[in-house]
Image (cartoon, rainbow, N blue to C red):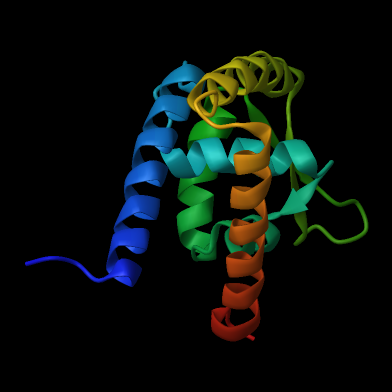
Length: 147
């Protein structure tokens, strides 16, 4: 049975993401981390410090699940927990120097890999895809994200 165009687009997006995530993960996954742990590292790299709630919200997972994933990063010395002196209940999470160094080298490798992944497209095609994905993402966030 032939898929309609919407199903073909969705299937293509899922297949692209599956392959891209697998390839990117293989370049960053020195410590046999899960994709959520890798995403946590990327998120912590963009924020100087984050709370467990912020990490859970960014990754769209529960706080207990975020805690479990973060524990492995702490055990490996890639992230650290710091209690706030004015509120001991508030724990801030940040990358350690070891985590920053690992991520910096892996981000460089990811950039090279991403360039190879997209080298079959012209700059105009890349710009068109970016515009389409941005439009779709805006639509999804506006209409389907939890408020």
